[in-house]
Image (cartoon, rainbow, N blue to C red; front, side, top):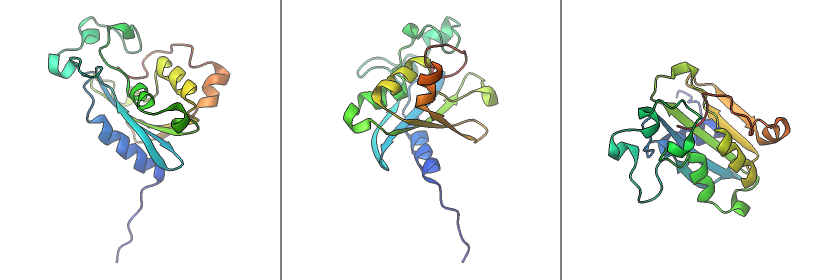
Length: 168
């Protein structure tokens, strides 16, 4: 009998985050998140308009794209709540604190292999406040990236826009 390779826990949760992303309603980028504490899924989230609101897929256009707004800028023109935000909103802090977030993202604007899957500066702030300790992502080349949330706090990378990363 041929031996099969078992997925690592990281690959497993990133695969679930990829499935969650399929619910996203953003036309630029789709993101899905799984928040895990002690090897249990606590919450999930995907990028999309607030509950009951019209979303970009229904409208057939993205206001930020229409205005030529670069990624990572002028979030106030975006209809979406980010995947990370939705996962945090869906969990109580005491239930998510100390957990790990698995983030999957896909770019539809032609970012290709240059697209870096990483929380935006606004989501980094929320992740810090939620008490998440680690974030795993996977880039378009299939490399798994690991972010220690304490590093964001230490180097204040959650405060500085670097361009081109994050949701929408």
